[in-house]
Amino acid sequence: MLRRAQQLFGLALAAFTPILFAQEAAEEGSNQVLNMPVGVTPVANQVYDLHMLIFWICVIIGVIVFGAMFWAMYFHRKSRGHQAEHWHESLKAEIAWTLVPFIILVAMAFPATTALKDLYDTSEADLDIRVTGYQWRWQYEYPEAGVSFLSELTSSEDQIYNLAEKGEFYLQEVNNPLVVPVDQKVRLLITAQDVIHSWWVPDFSVKRDAIPGYINETWFQVEEPGIYRGACTELCGQGHAFMPIVVHAVEQDEFDDWLAEQQAEAEAIAQLMEQTFTMEELMSRGQEAYQRTCAACHQANGQGIPPAFPSLIGTPIITGPVEDQLDVIVNGVSGTAMQAFGALLNEVDIAAIITYERNAWGNDTGDIVQPIDVYNYVQGQ
Image 1 (cartoon, helix red, strand yellow):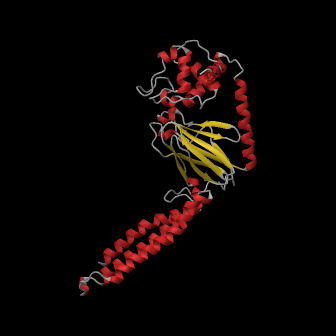
Image 2 (cartoon, one colour):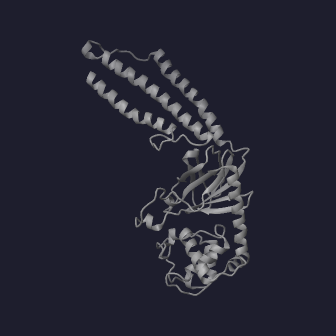
């Protein structure tokens, strides 16, 4: 019996040791993944402290309960002459095992309620950002600044299909990260355009579903500059793994400079609409925009993934009237996976993509679409 008790104690110690080391590693900023991250926001710190408080309460309860069991089994075993008691319906025991858990639950409810209240308090925000989930990318809008952009995966097709070496941040890198200032309360207004997505950054303790037709609110206030990564955590289709989240938290001055650059870039895009581009310029820009936005569904070689994602090689939509292809890209196709890109891409990128698709992979239509053509089409709808 003693040997059995020693074995059980050894198993219990082996089970708790990794958790103890994980707590120490998390507090020291290690890459240890056996415990939840401490986080870089006030709410994340509250959640971590609450998690550890309840964990240690459970440890103490476990030690007391199993300690009493092992002590009773060893010191009151039959070989020492003890006989089992024949009693039941003890009022004192009933009161004890009802009252004690009640007191423990009430004690745990106070810090949990405080954390939940802070988690859902989105009032008095310093900055509002609208987040929209699409298959399979994120759109970020700064309404007060008039800035909007798409954040899309930049891991290459060759990496995805194991034809190239994967980097440290494989499937965790994007072309346009979300940029926020530190020590400012940032409120996110989260929604979706097609299916349910979920915006999750573990270092912020933020996870909110993005639901079409609804706007969910959440907030965070980053205390330390840095790069923080997350992902969509709602199964949203075959490209679910390809819509990571990257947040750059920077000092206020750096954020102001970045925001001014984005505003200047938006103005530059507007000015480009008045320009006439050559075939070579449109093909170069179109190839880049296609690889970033369209290749996930239609493949880099334009062959598609039938029947959900048709081929773009020699098909009527590519070789037919330009207006038909404009309608598909701008307005999408109802009842299919082809979403509307009119609100996602600017006129320059749409013109470049159409020109590229109509003159790549042997299509050779010779058609050139200018940004002003896209603008006139959208305005004439």
